[in-house]
Length: 126
Image (tube, rainbow, N blue to C red; front, side):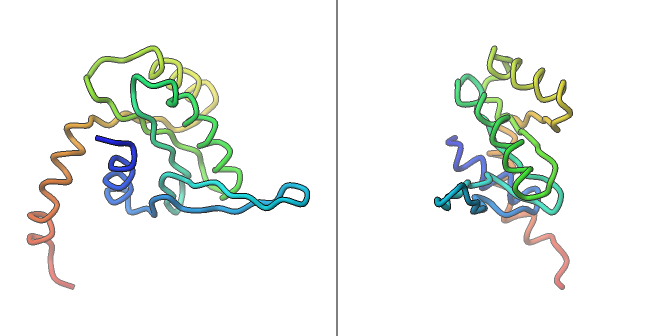
């Protein structure tokens, strides 16, 4: 599973908007960030286990939360049920600074995605 796939699945589960673009200005330059998933309450960044890029998720979540006036959150995607040094460091730092942190299993996300059509059929018509 790629990070982009995880973002799409998780954001659908959480009722958020994936890859939300937020512009900001710096001196004479206007630039932007992409929030992996934005909900009414949180700016969420998705990190993949066993990658140094997981460290970036904590920085991005806190910066994006400042830009969007939401709470920061990091969700780590666990691919093997083993906590790596990257996962441990991100979790410990997030918790020490009051950043919401969660771990979701890759296999759970895959099953959720595969069963979405069945859940849609069972949903009451509005």
